[in-house]
Length: 317
Image 1 (cartoon, rainbow, N blue to C red):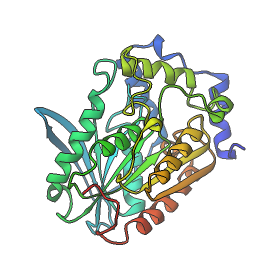
Image 2: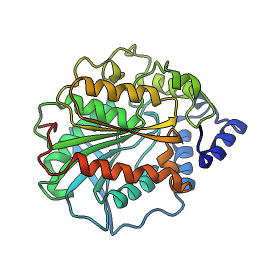
Image 3: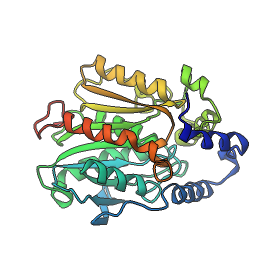
């Protein structure tokens, strides 16, 4: 059942459906997405330090933004990968969310930009995320204490890039202690029961996401590639412990739950958090719907349990 705080968004989505993404240029979509972010977080959380960063990655420069909370003990550093269906999103669209997460968890956040489709199709964004994790690990002392635990967190498409990157980095001594996946997408098929039940009219439209996968893959036939569809992974053993956050009324719910089960199958410790009555991307609504942030307290508590000290097992090391 949809939470009462979400009902106005559902009504609006049904009364004024979003235009199909093919009707806009990529830049127009990004401008629209950025404009929406400003409405969703009209009063961003004030923090003692927010700093712009440039990361040198394989001859490229990636923008990043460091968030330092008031209750900072430099215990951990979260590398955050924004969402936006592989086509939109940037540091500004998720600025409000990163500020709030940093404040509520007491962890430093380093939000990362990566190359977007269709100008930079698969695997460009994935390569950026993977290589950035390596660089951030090596430069950890520039962003937090040198022995701070690393956590990699992603939102929607960013969660997919984050978990695939960590799978590719198994065996590397990087000090990544956990991964946090916020309502990830697990591939272009989108054929689950929740995908059918919440196909349209619930903020994330399945047909729009399928179109974006086409932009991301640039007509490459890669549906069975584990880097595109992590649910088809043949081996996830040794990846960091995971917290998987799902929304009850999200077309992506079932595939995220299935991925949590797949991680468990390979012996990876997993915590599954379900936000009852919430929609896809509900955390980005937190600036205007306080109830959407209730899960953040649980997330902070789960992080604390998952990382009782810097020697937590299951890290990428």
